[in-house]
Length: 203
Image (tube, rainbow, N blue to C red; front, top):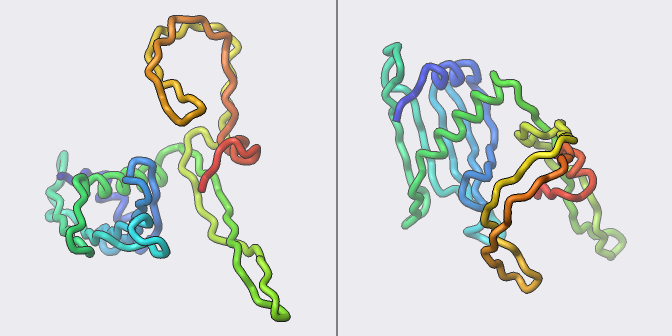
């Protein structure tokens, strides 16, 4: 693996930052806690589908450039420590690339970040009775290029023939062929509006 100059620059610019990244490209139930210190990127990979009640760290990763040679790339010094016996992950280095790419895009590209506020339901005993109370939870940001963007296209266009997995009410799917057809425009709501209207869940 190589560090590019972009990665060296981003780690210098974000020195002392800590955060959490969850991505649909990670394995299901996985998220990464990262910390940046003195040009090094430290990752803890967590999975919340191993234990019913706890998120468990499965890997500790520390990466840094071996040298300061300028050019197309730098050698990457990478230490990977499994924290659970027998824990296997085929593409462990993909997490490094994903976090570095996320940091570069978030810091320097023109992207949209949608703030999502969460709530927590707790059981509280009061006057010998148990009540359910709702409290404010953590706020986080959804990295989404279409978070605030609503797309409308009123012009007709042709859709070429294609296969599709058609779901059925009994939970099965069947591969079907869709013939070429003309679509009379389309309207895509902004993601934030889909969330407000209950069409998309962020949990």
